[in-house]
Image (tube, rainbow, N blue to C red; front, top):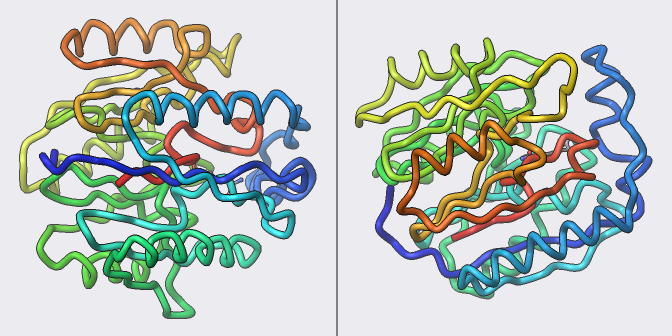
Length: 285
Ligand code: CIR
C-alpha cells in the first residue's frame, strides 16, 4: 500500500430522486433481481451524515457536494474518479444517467490543482467501484460497468503502475463488492463464487504478493447479514468496515486479523437497497 498520506475526501448528499430513479431499478430488472425496496430517505441521510463524520473523525478534510436532483445516483462519488497521488482520472460511468456526475467532482479536483485526465472515448466505460489500488498496482473489474477500453484509460493515465483486468460476471456490480484492499498486502475477498474467481485472477496476474482475507457469504435465511462485507475502506492505518449487526462474522474476522489497525464501523445501510457499498459513498485521496 502506498505510504502517501490520505488527507481529503469528497462525499455527495442524497437527492430525493434516488428513491424512484436510481440505476438500480434498471439493473435489477435486467438481471432478474428482486425489485428495489423503497429507500427511507431520512434514515439514509442520517447514516450518510454519520459516515461523513467518521471520515472527519479519522482526520480527513471532507468536501460535501450538494445533491443534484437530476442525478439520482450522485452520492456514489467513488464511481466518478480514480485518484492516486496527484493524478485523477475522471471516469465514464456505464449509464448515460450517471455521466454528468463527474462534473462536480472534476471542479473540486481542479480547484485542488490535481493533474486531471478523462475517459473521453464514447465506447469506453469505467466506474471507480471496479478499481482498487494496492500501492503497487491496480486491479480493475472487467464488469457490466467497466470495459476493456475503459481499462486502457487507467493504463494510459498511470503508466508507472501495472493494471490488471479482473473478469467479473453479473449480477455482481463492481469488483470491490467481491474483492477490496483491506490493509497493506491484504485483500478482503468474499467467499462467493465471484470472489473465488476474482481471487484466482488476482493471483494469476499480480506482480506483488498479497494475502486473501476471506469474508463470509450471506446466510440464505438472512441474506443481508455479512453481505458484501469485503467492501472496506483503508487509509493511513485506519480500517472502516461494516457495522457489527450487518456483518457479525465479518467484524470478528477483521478484529482478529487487524488488532493493530484503528478500526471503525460505518454503514450506508439504506443505500444498499440501490446497490451501494461502503466504499462507493466517498472518494478518498
Ligand atoms: C448504480 O447502479 O450505478 C448505483 N445504483 C449504485 C452504484 C454503487 N456504486 C458502487 O458501489 N461503487
